[in-house]
Length: 381
Image 1: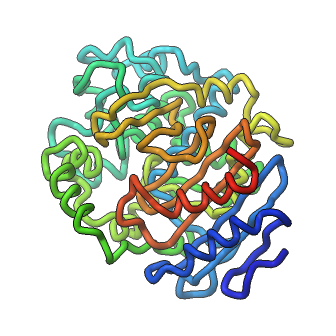
Image 2 (image 1 turned 120 degrees about the horizontal axis):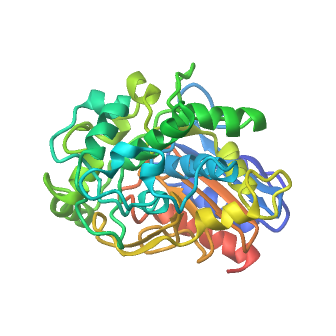
């Protein structure tokens, strides 16, 4: 069935509630556009687009930065290395990166690192923007740090998770994570996804919300004030000072190795990536055994950075108060810009939503709830 005139794309019969939910979101006064792609049991059931990027209407080829949804993309790349036998989630990080073991970190495993337990949210001394964008100087600085907290509970590594994952990949393969992602995952499957690349034309911009509720402003002023764990994690101890929607537009930012933040994707390709991570996939990216290991719960509890209960597998966010993924069996990752990519093995579901307007509150994006509730209406909880 074709979507209404206000939207572009198609939905399969029975999936009209999701089309209606997407249309309701697009009718919002601040919405500049979005893409939504849903795959169920190996079949595309929703492929919808709305709005424009100023050069033309949003469509299947519209690419945009997905912010922390990049972590799910990078986690898929790491899972491929694990499936090839190049990476062992349960091995100590020092097997691949000996210098990481300084200052009491020698027993930290890859799984603990990837599940945000290492306590390396930022260096103790301020980093520079060049250090963050290059990655390797920041990785060296983090290797020389002591963990801020004992292992056990997660502490969200908003930016440094990508730096640590990138250095781990470089130690194993000699290449950067974005390069390995392209070679092993994206090019062979024609996925329009990249990390740290020069794109021409550049990806479509995202825009900050202009209407921010007073409670959100007050909460941000308290919990993200300079010096707090959240501020340190988001800014890498002051290295990133611009608003995210401006900072991520810079060519040097897009070209940097930032697997936690600067992934670029289309909605269709992001959904296809998650579909390939499901056990029922026709063209599986990894074995079922590796998939279970990658999405198995590795850390959960009140997050030391976010202040809410969070849960993680090996890089994938798992359903929790911090990460509302619509189902207890879902895995994936949202981003501060509102992007969401997820897979749900039990329901055979893969979904990607890429909005062009950032939410006022990144940890409580009402658009996600509206879409995921509509999906549940169609296929059940």
